[in-house]
Image (tube, rainbow, N blue to C red; front, side, top):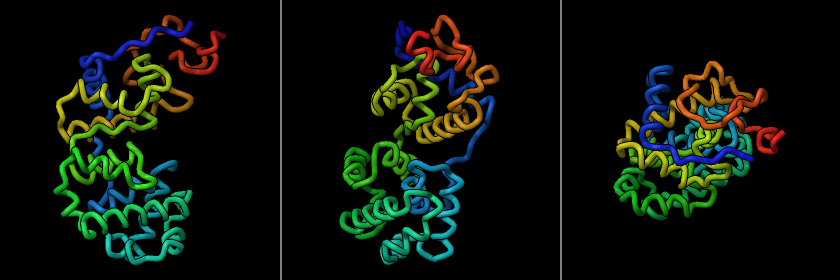
Length: 242
């Protein structure tokens, strides 16, 4: 039978942060020269890696369209060609245009005006934009507008599940609440914690994990017997009881 899932206590969540910060140090996220560049990056990074996004952003900068006015004016076909390195370029070009339509309609194209919108109403408005889901919306809110919302991504769910701290298939907002309940609502903390989790996911908690060298080894997990395939009871063999 699969192990009984436990709700992570605030102390465990804070201990994880301490371990990660000690191992990796401050991450200095999100990479971006302007608020608008951060927003564009948050949309482009869907289903791709950051190196590809950097290439796409460099193309946009060289073309002079990495501003609200520039992106609003560029034809969608040309925009798609510029962001080709980010993958799914036709879909993402349309999503960027959807965001621009929203920005122009609700805030007259002004990010300064958008920044004045209270979080309680801004988040639902972002989520209403076609192509912007919870992770993208929260990345924009945290990194572009300094709002204290915790960003949950695939790295977050992966390491929590492998440590038996969430159940398989836990939804976005349930995982987000784990961190919101454990931490003070400080932008700097939420920013740093998310960046550290991404670093953990890239360096150790990969699809094929490097568990024995992981800075979170022995912090917490209640899997009684380690699987020689994944070490954390998270692979198909573990779940099938093999």
